[in-house]
Length: 462
Image (cartoon, rainbow, N blue to C red):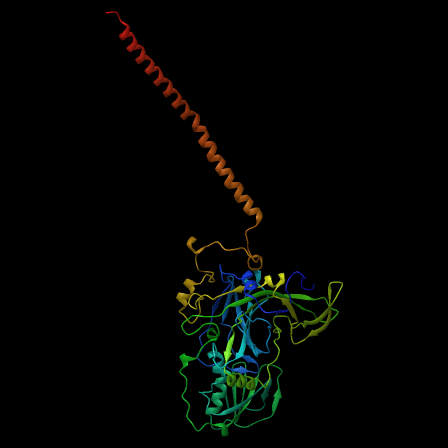
């Protein structure tokens, strides 16, 4: 079936400037849905095509449901119109972190995927740029190199190194004065002392050649390992603070094997950080060059859609979708929403982020993060940790919940207990009343007897 006409579908573009009054309507201040845990880095990130090499140890919790990082990708701007009041910059690219839910989260009603989207801007005043700056900072590689994705060098290896990253592989070849080429495949580095023929692999294997003539005459200072920053620095500053705000929306996309096939739907939770990341023009241009000269469009990973193509274009006939184009790469169509319509009110705006420490980043000690994060299933809660929050159907109607029958049953039991207590009290009241009445009558009789006694004494003849 196709996505419902009553829900958002595809990538949401915004039409018209966002006015403060419109933003206020969708502002959430009572809660924040996201908690992050980032794996510290001991090496700088590596760009493989448009993909940034990262591990699944980076996780995000959405309303206590865990999502694991699948990939990080640089692409053409995915979102349009997310310009907040007072801002004027137009993004030149976008960084998208794609997360998948754990089996437990999926069974509890979590969406099929979570997308964290960071617009990239060119600016003379860089901000949140440290993570991406590392990609073009080759302080630890003293020679030039050229990478090709989806190819491997044939023939015997001069050396084979296990448990490597792409950057370590390039550095190992650069440091070997006889190495001319290398192939990096699934954590294994194949060092070549010749330049054999290149064979296509059709996967994310990377092969490259060393250019010794590109060695700098100036000796570069190697960056200490503990100074490499993780994905956390896209969101938080070094002191744990953040000026980011979020625009979040649930959406739906369709996959179908052919134009005439029955579609299946995928639910996505999309979070846009409108402030994004501001890069120096030279840094951005260098990144694009390393990515092959142009950035691709964002595509849903094949593992999320079961290798099925996505619906890319359609026409409406009598209110129903009729597919006209599908994308085997996983591109998604865009739906434009005016900021002055009710559809815009399906988005949520969060004017701030919790601090890095309260977000339970893995850069902190595991003991402190596990004790402070409500996302940790083993973390016991006390009654003081609960608070009343506005009900929001998109965020709260998922997984286990209290049903109306349970509420009515609880109310009935409470009413019965109250009635029983009232009845018990009422059975005791007549006894108390009888005692009061009897005491009052006895008192009146005594007073009358005293009164009569005094009258008799006064009326006695002398």
